[in-house]
Image (cartoon, rainbow, N blue to C red; front, top):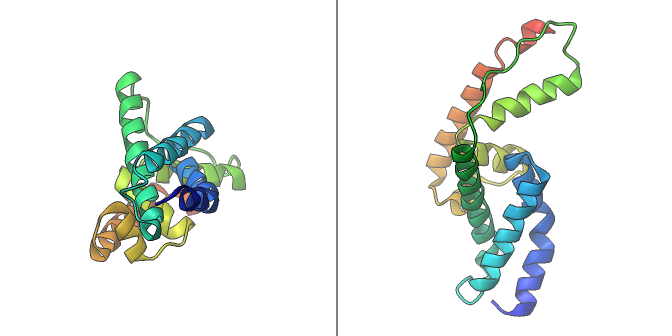
Length: 162
């Protein structure tokens, strides 16, 4: 990949990559750091990365970088309570429901979280997700099924509260 191709890839994918990182990290600063890390690694490895495969390479690198950041942060801080807070039906409004859904997604294992974000929010195909996360399409389907089931279990009582 040459300098022109690098600039094209960065310009075309920076917003998508930041959105993915933001949903995964839930922190603007951490998402910016992850994206910047991806761009830096892409520049260093530009001669090894084919222009046509740069998108998958960048998402894979972002995923790995975000997992490393989360693991590092978890080692540095005390683990908090991972339970979704109980609310009465009068307390739930649309914003709070979205927060509960975001929380349910945020506590998924990293691979399942990435698959949910890439499939349901970004609209990638099973094959594209497999290329990004180095999984087969059938593995992607299994992880997606398991992630959706975990979210359903987390949100099971939500409809009864409204």
